[in-house]
Structures are given as C-alpha cells and as structure tokens.
Length: 189
Image (cartoon, rainbow, N blue to C red; front, side):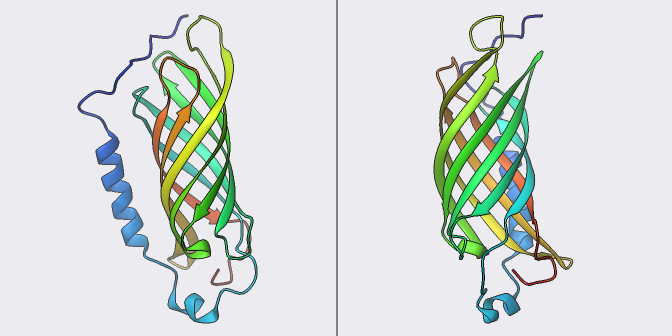
C-alpha cells in the first residue's frame, strides 16, 4: 500500500495556534518553583526527567507523539542532553524519528527558555515505495517550567523543532510535553 503523497505547504487552518494556546495556558497555570526551593539554594545536581509529548507537524499536516529524557550536564541544569523519539501519523503510513540534542536552559533547574540542536535519524517513505532511513540535523527552541502541582514535581514544556533532512518536506514539529523527575520526588528540586 503506497502512502498518500506528502503536502508541500501547510493549510491556512493549521491546528498549531490552537495547540500553542492550550499549552501556554497550562504552562502559565503551573507557575514556577515553590518559594522554599528558591530559598534553599538548590544544592546538588538537578534530577534527570523523563516525559511524553504530543503535537503537530505543520509541514506534513500530521499528528506527532513522542517521548524524551532531559539529562543535566551541569549541576545547575543550564545544559541538558535530550535524547528523544517521535512517531508521525501520516495518512496511510507512519514515520519514525530519533533525536540526540544538546540544549541550553536559561533558568537551569528552574526552567525557562531553551535552545539547541543535534542529530536526527528518520525512517519513512520519502520519494519511493520502500521505507528509507535518512539522517540530518535538528534546531530546537522552547520553554520548560519546573515546579510542583498538587505536591507532585512536574515539568511542562512547549517545543518547536525544525528538522533538516534531505526529504521533499522538512518536518516542522510543535509539541506540548510533561516531564517527571526520575528521582527526588520528596525534595523541592
């Protein structure tokens, strides 16, 4: 079964503005870290976080579902390694992508704006009937918050990802994600 051809431009009625408005509301509702953590000074390393994300590929006009790890490289969390994977649900087919990115977070362990990039490996139906795997580069921009919601440490993220792979349509993905620390649930980190 041949997948339907991928469009070359996004429709005027894109779902991206609605997704970003919903996600922005949730980020603002989360707020920042609790005052006690700010007074304590946040000693020690920031805990790695694991999470899920969902969104929309604006160029392919398709839904995206993925997962990521956020691994601090510096004790304050200003630099993170972010391995991730995504599935893009195209009409009649699925494309898979794994990413290895490095990002700089303005507020470190407290969150903030982040920017970075890395490598992408994508498996899909690009120009032929057979599945192919291609490599390329990512550019990532976003916002991440870290705090507590109902006593549970949680991080919320909004992310824009531009993928530069030799394909008819370069993926341009906007996602909303939720992250939980792998340890440190009883602390204010």
